[in-house]
Image (cartoon, rainbow, N blue to C red; front, top):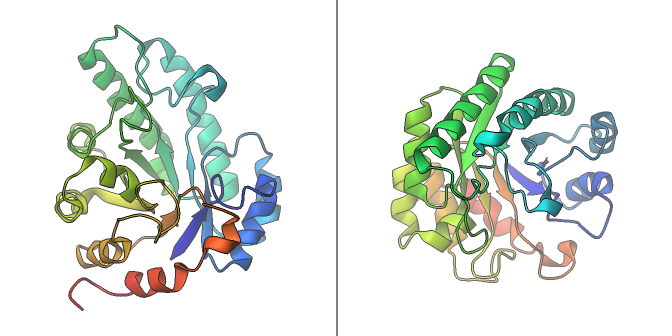
Length: 263
């Protein structure tokens, strides 16, 4: 299944109108980073049956520099309030995954406290969503695009998952972020394989559509299938021009998704 992140794609239109545009372009579903400015019922009507796979948990105020609340010991209450908001939106939208952004811990906060707060917040969200059959995801974000982000490499993400040890918590494996930090993408896929719950992609450098950079995304898709990943692949890139003009990569991506490495 090939899905579109409509927070980055089809931005020539208002967000609700991007969902039918993604369907018309051939995507099988969508994800929305932050749907909270819209009534979820409006988004459901706009989707008209198109699956909405994933949203992010509330992550603070981007205008104030927030890229996540979950590591801030002074804002645990705000994160926990966001749990009910995320649950309500996930329920109305019918999405089965909610991603947690670690964000930047406040200056001077001890690393051990930061890690404990993050683990406890993720567990609390997972405990709230798991009874509904939903998964919680955590992801690493490369330190070049988001300096100071707490989980900025694959090993830290995998270590955190082991520490949380919750059956409803998995890894959001973003091929763009991994390509920026890992010297060997193939080895990274093998290391993460058992914990991957969702895959996103963009080419690197540039974070544009496949074929504009140097990442062999087709090989990565085949390898992910061969190590047992059976989920969707989400296009989360910044189009170099109009979204529709840059979708020539889709047939090759679908072919790669349907094959295993070596087949």
